[in-house]
Length: 361
Image (cartoon, rainbow, N blue to C red; front, side, top):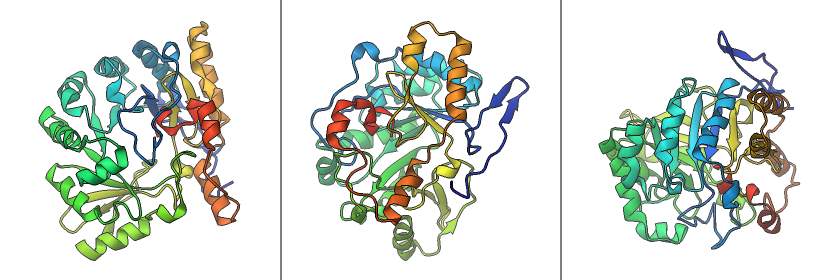
């Protein structure tokens, strides 16, 4: 057990509402809700193959079912919901789900992670529905690199989508960049400068092993230390900002007041403070991004389990949570015991739930 993971008691959220904690004292506070496993890009670090085994259409939850399931999680402490995919804007009626979630008074923050291709079409509609924040994945500012990475010529639409965010009325835009050695590590300054132009906080994510098909290797990881060294060589002194509880990004401040973030999940795992839970579009619940097994909430839900039974199932599942997948992977690397990818490609094809795009990354 990590020295950082220590038992604490559940934290009261209100007179009738408490936050459950797992065996290490980590609270259940954040839900990543995947609304679809489909995507309109084929990024090499996430979905490198042309074809995938998709979740059966009849198993995918309706928007009303997603809102009800979210309600069970908020009864147990969740107050932040992030809508993910695949590409969530491919899910028809997504703004309707946002409206349903806004009716839940325990939800204080509803965010969306998108690749931005369809964002210009839906930004205003999502803002009017009550969505709070948007994060756009943007790994390069060079159209030819974008095509190389994603296998699609949609760079212009992504930029249009990013520019539509402020026009729609949103603030707090974030741009997520996976930093990959030898691919885009020469664009980090350009990305921060672009972020200034569009009033966005850029967050650099260390390249993670998210499955057996992406040919991940440690050599491709451009670490937090290397990112800071590169940026300080251009901007000068960089100041770390105070930590923000369970937030995965470490924030830094440039001399001109610009804030950027780094998510060092490969070299510095943050399992000790992870409060995130993940539900796939067909209702499989995973307590860790790297978990190889989950709980089928859809089966119980559609079989007629009562609200009390559903809450009890989720509470028991979280209270028994011991997951610290990133730390365990790091330990294997440190001891020289890790060989090959996280999950073999054949196993991924047998169970689409093991694909990271199915559980919201």
